[in-house]
Image (cartoon, rainbow, N blue to C red):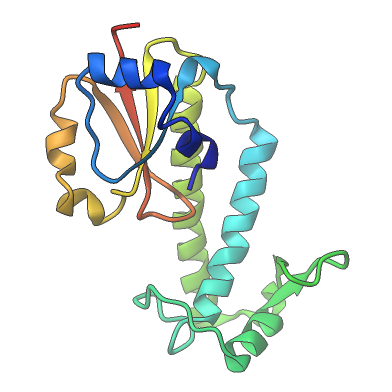
Length: 189
């Protein structure tokens, strides 16, 4: 959830632009004028990738049964906590976040599964931030954050949105794919 974008829903300038361009998006969660935005730095992208990689291991440890890529949920229990502690490391300053992977404890099929899931997670992060960077600083682009990512795209008329004259591109949020970022061409100021 992009809280700054959420705070801009009632921005009068943005409301005027949205209305003038005929932009209507279901499950709207926010806007940003891309002219006011800076590109995301390579270091920030790397940090997001590192977090996503650790998150993949935690997710796989919390599936039932363990390392089940078909289980979208997470099970929080003392058993899955022990599995996370076995496969992940924590930063000395923080005792609540995992910060690294114990690769020496991951072998065979688990390692193969993990490498593939990490590859997918990296791609999601890169797609999201490369798309952002493509439009950052542009006067004629509006960023729209909505809760229609992933399978929600089909259920909430995403294909109809993609046919709109203002639609440029859509990318699912790398952290929570039920959200997506939509980039819209705006012509009226």
